[in-house]
Image (cartoon, rainbow, N blue to C red; front, top):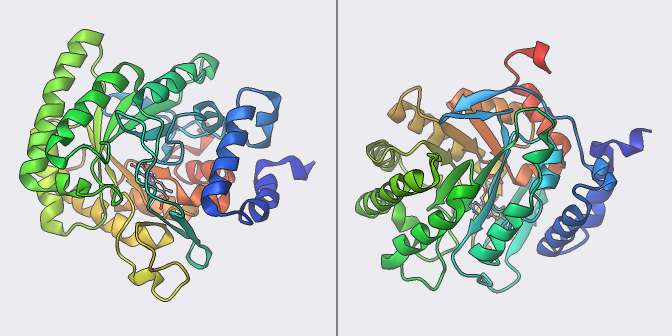
Length: 358
Ligand SMILES: Cc1cc2nc3c(=O)[nH]c(=O)nc-3n(C[C@H](O)[C@H](O)[C@H](O)COP(=O)(O)O)c2cc1C
């Protein structure tokens, strides 16, 4: 029954979904996943997970392909994404309080370039609702003796919190997510929250990571586990800025870096419909900048510092190029919208180091 294969199903679903405004299509999809996860209907998007374990930051990742943050901001569909065969899933960005995000429309497709522009602005239901959803997820219990998928919880700040008080929001989120996360991501690179990216600059980053690192020590003692902290950075940085960030990550003993978020650049899409919309551009046009930042990070951080590469993975070759640039593992967002769940297995297989383990 080839029609029941997930890839073919997505081939049927995509024209239907692309008939809707992008954000509405997103909501329909997440509602569908939330309703069907852990039911027999999940077979529509389930795939056997590629087994290719790798240890990074002291964690065993079942394979090297993850879901990037922002697709499941409220952590409603963790089990559905686990069923697609991801080795790790990152949910959020969550902020301490619920907030509506920017006015709609705020998400645009650029199908000619396999790209999206979004200026959602951390629309989310807030930390309490997020944690309630995280605690409902069953993927750890249902791993059937296999290495469980890893869960990353991505944290940010509310739009209404002045940037000088940003640290308070990150610490409030860190306190809440810490016991539930396999790793925590400090997101300082969304272009859609005013001044957020200024947290990437020297003194601001030093102060934020210093406070976060100190709180992590207290949380590690309280909860009896030391959860790794990753920092997610932008592609719109020059080599000197990347070098300063790399040194700051190491100084504060961060466990990894996620590179990159969306880009503010528009050269790769100039002239296309929606190209002039404000927000972050993702998908194929961010690939090159993301790979450049990954290579610069690897050069600055040395061979052992974990780097998760994200930005513009649309096929197996793109995933391999991220590893070649210096990433240890990869994440996908926009590729999932254009290619569907089949991309997860395709990328994980392409990154397999020992093909006898497939
Ligand atoms: C609609 C949309 C929303 C996003 N929201 C977040 C977010 O809340 N937090 C975050 O860290 N990254 C967010 N991202 C960035 C992605 O996680 C990823 O870093 C970026 O899109 C590049 O990867 P891609 O080309 O595979 O999409 C978002 C991306 C998109 C397209």
